[in-house]
Image (cartoon, rainbow, N blue to C red; front, side, top):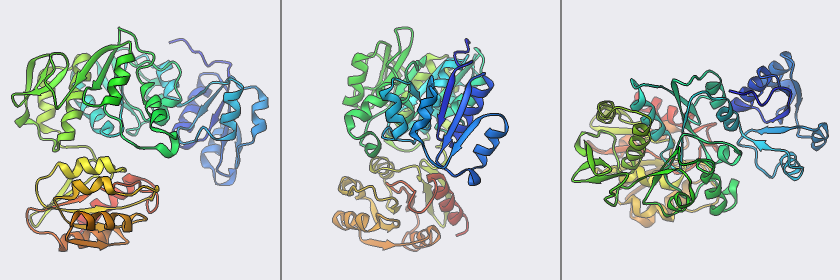
Length: 447
């Protein structure tokens, strides 16, 4: 693929994993790279390593005068807001500001399946990856799911497929991004502290199909009115999916079977992944993977064996008849609603975390099967209030995850579900939701 970055003067703004990967890639491609990161130089091992291979490095602050150097492009870490003075000034000066998924799409020799949505991205991405295994093209996982997309893209060939999980933060920083297949799962209020309004959030998500043509495919949730609005203006070939309506075209549920364009593919009884919300993820994954050549036999095999991804309704262990599930990736109310609705048994719920200013009234209807709440973190009082309003009989507080798990065990019985589904981000107590989930799993294993 043509190298459009050679000789270009590029600023990489913010490091972390994706920033470092982008800086190294651009350097290999022959760009003149400057790195600017907020972390002080003496504590910044990444910046020191990049300087050692010949990159210009500025650390500790974001000096606005940097833009006087005349950059052709800025590659921004997705977490840096557009209110950052350098970003604001660059946009004012018509300097392109992109995220590293734009680089990945531009250098990938492999076609891309891109997946976005407020909830279910990781499960759907993993399902697609598994369904494509053993087919004519080798699938490669990339993006938000753990491997920086531009690192994966650099090593691709035309006989592979990149299966890419993308967030609204990443999509907002795209200009020419054009996946062969895009998947839009749903839209719920999330990340509004970053995007400002739901309209802006939808605008960012919609960029997944903005550059697609009739040669491409847009797999979308027919049951979500916001997603349907995006489909109505997409130029791609449309593949709708619905768990609520029978569709003549696309994917739906009919006579207890998953159907594609009216043809039954898989019996629902053979699917092992719990929860109605996961049926949406499954339909989306089938649509995307069949489009790119997945075999029906392989799809059936995946659905009869795939029981969930780590930290997303992950079955951990059964202890004295209680089944423990790790849903630490539920960082918003809707994700926890979906998890709670996946079970018919009595539930002991572990929840709480970063306070983003919202209350939990929307969670109340989903607490009907919750017999006890163990709340922690900044939101514990708010969650306790919601639980009391829902009539939850036992509400307790814990500071450490180990204490929360111990309390959950003591206040549960045989055949109960003990569910970590925090409904909040983890950053008040843990660096990541993965760390929070790992602590839960360790506490369960040590019971």
